[in-house]
Image 1 (cartoon, one colour):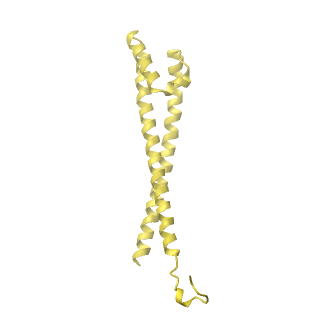
Image 2 (cartoon, one colour; image 1 turned 30 degrees about the horizontal axis):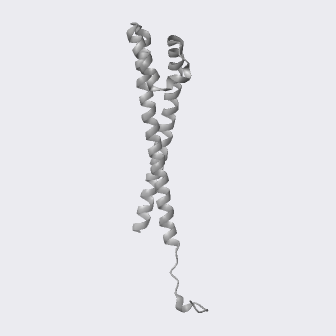
Image 3 (cartoon, one colour; image 1 turned 180 degrees about the horizontal axis):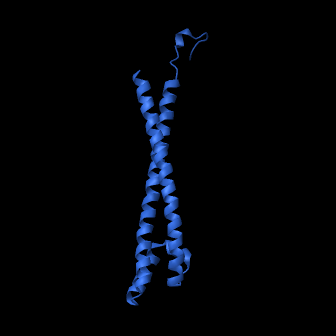
Length: 131
């Protein structure tokens, strides 16, 4: 009876992790779409290749340039981009941690079931001699 309760708790925990992972992945996708729109606008204003705007160092360089030139609109866009990029990276880490936790849990479950499936062999009752 106790084993069944533990197994049910593990299944519920896995279901919660899967649901959380789906929600986080949807949020991550929305964040990336929003960042793409911001990158397009930022690339136009800064005249920088949009592919480099995923690098925090490039954003920092643009921020310094906009600050020196007193270009307020570009400066505010860079600040927003830096903030969003930090959020995106944090979301990536969270999703990776949940996936790793789920993988470790499934490995532990497989090991537990493998241990249960091992049989205890009674060598005395075997029809042949054991070495």
